[in-house]
Amino acid sequence: MEIEEKKGWSWLGFLFAPFYYAGYGDMKKGLIFALISGFPLFAIFICIYGGLKAKKELPIGEVDFKWSNAVIAFVVTFITYVVLKTVITSLKG
Image 1 (cartoon, helix red, strand yellow):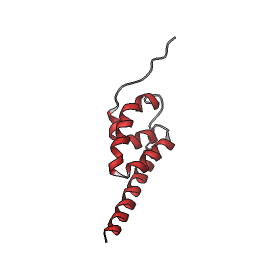
Image 2: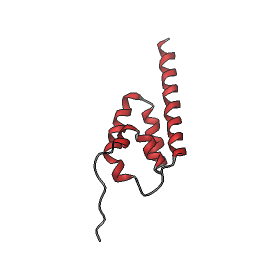
Image 3: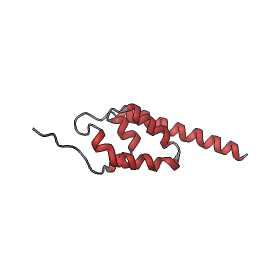
Image 4: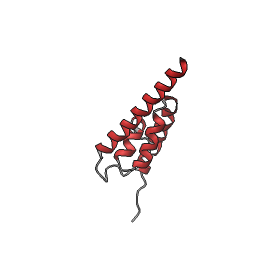
């Protein structure tokens, strides 16, 4: 019996990479992505990675999506963005 390998582009992985990874149980990678995504310039690279790899790396359809983990990743992204914005504003004078 051959196991079919999942592959292909994931639009949800592209649009919501940190939250998608955290929600499907890869909390470590989801939080790292959330921290990096707080920096808008780097967020696009995380999104592209999520779009390319989500179907292969995540148990989509095999386990339930954990919304609480996705919310935690969102809060981490938001806090990172706010801190970055505050630092940039204070440096401008």
